[in-house]
Image (tube, rainbow, N blue to C red):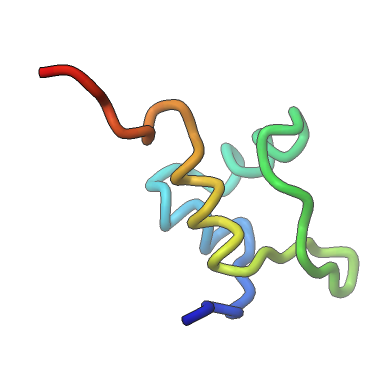
Length: 66
């Protein structure tokens, strides 16, 4: 099942528990995927896009070993 809801900076920030300005900074520094949609000059991402990005972030990769 795919989640095609569009998320704003605020939605992404709530999902990863940071401030919206942090998410804006991630985008500015190329750390966030390109937006899936832009409306009125504001970027939006599909929830699935952000979930995949979160899963691929270094701090969220499965840890091996012990």
